[in-house]
Image (cartoon, rainbow, N blue to C red; front, side):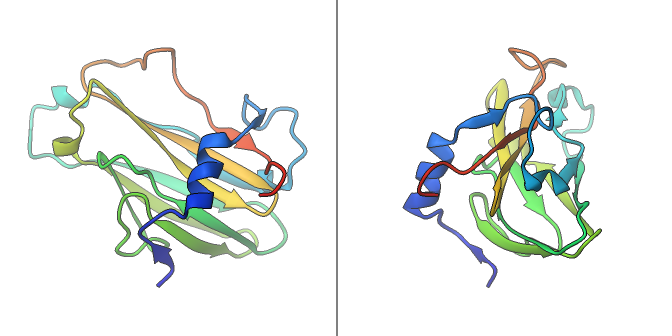
Length: 168
């Protein structure tokens, strides 16, 4: 089984104490983890409650792409908020908060589907992120569900990258 249902205490601490090296995403960073990127870099479900069909399934696709010359291995931490369900070949039978071990070949890519679980999106604005932990840093892909608006409070989020702190 490539996924574990509980984040380890160490991983939870890392998520809470991460330090930003380059808050604007790719700009100015020299981390090798830039070889892995997501398209789009942010997933926002805008004004989802205005959908006329309450039974409609609201989904977004996310592509993870290895732009390097070598195989990349990483840990994929799924969002913990139950409003966001992630599925795809890399995360079979995964539950919110699972951590999956993933390998992508050189030039390879994989598609993930993020489904908005309306029954759990009970806030005006739900936020979480998909976290990718590589040997040389972290990639954070924000996930936002806006019930009634087009614009998140504080503006649209952006992808972030960090480097491991001492002891990580």
